[in-house]
Image (cartoon, rainbow, N blue to C red; front, top):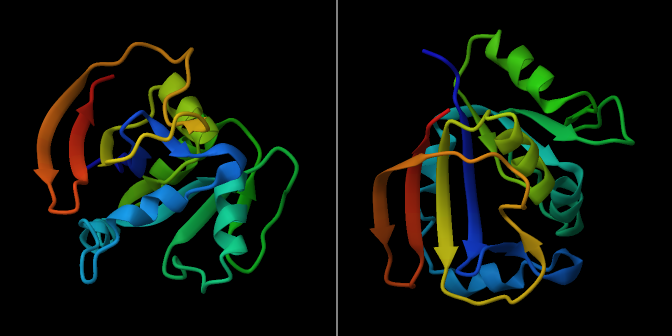
Length: 176
């Protein structure tokens, strides 16, 4: 079976993954003790992670332990090369990275942003599935999940889940 690229991400109801200056505080309004919205189960299905550099830098700014020690993590960067203790930097076209990963046996590939990475993956029609958690909040401006200029793509709704916190999770297959 082909290793799928899966976008698993949260956005505001008006389509933003971050406020200005990459502020993601609004995501915490749905935090509930013991509720991970299927994240741990999803993590069992992937062994590779792709992030943009801003997303990786944001994670490092939290001062928490790196969450994906058990996975191969690639960070897309125009300026950094090589690797650090957590990630391998990659600065060639994203389609080359996906092709390289798919040549190797393994589980699925997890993309968690940011907006530029999602745009490039959609532009190249490389996303196979989307799991989008919609946060019941209007941000108004910031970083949009779906930038203009990407190709038209049809989605098939696989399921939707409503949670008591108001979060609605949408699962889609992406048609090429």
